[in-house]
Image (tube, rainbow, N blue to C red):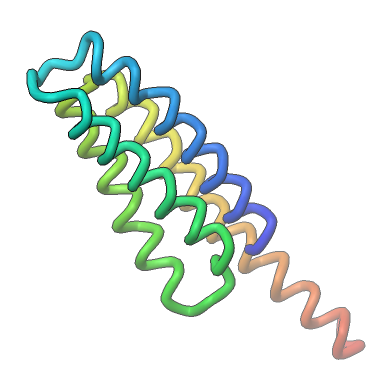
Length: 113
């Protein structure tokens, strides 16, 4: 779970940072640029911070909340609904496959596998 979850969150943070100029220049909602910049940087920081603690029990639900926030950015940049959907699917796969790998590692460590 650690490697897969961290990878998804870090790459997602990079995409969020790259979406900031798009939101400022061609976003569907008008407003002061500092609002979009601050919100984008804050979201990216939250994604990176979660990547550092992705093995904690509470990290998966927090990760889902962040996935919803990334999807919500589609209000500003409509294509983020597609990109956010892809990352939500990758997050789901990271959780599913990561837990499977963790279980197999635990079996191997116990000598029962």
